[in-house]
Length: 220
Image (tube, rainbow, N blue to C red):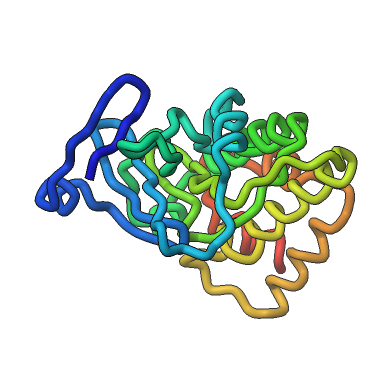
């Protein structure tokens, strides 16, 4: 396989690709090259994915905790083949349950900041799944392959944050924490109110508290 990333030409053998292999999904395959993750599209994929112009526009937006395309990838015939992002070494997600609540709150605040940045650029931030949130030296959202540019800014402002709130409530906060369906329902109903999730976490925060004790306390 021959790939071009910027001015760099990569001639990759099958052995190279096997060594670089990280994972694969509906859109293509992820390889590691130094500090970069290469998302190379599968030519047989029928899944909607970032087009060249959208990937280029996303690469021009500055975010910290939502990983966007860095450089575009082309094949030897200059066909668009995917993009690179920062490569992260991930840790067992169960470690999240031992994260001090103040640190957890700060991490979520950084993601919110990026969500607001993307909202201001009319980007629909989608595809919130546990496989797309990485615990590394902090919390990161990866795989922008389903993000879209739209023109409904007012809709995006509420929807981007609303979906992320409920992703946190349904999937991230309870991860590794035993919660009943009633407790999760109570938590969900509370955050349908006007308070932002991260603001309430900060209000409840204590240096010795953990995410687990936070969930237990507010769901009594």
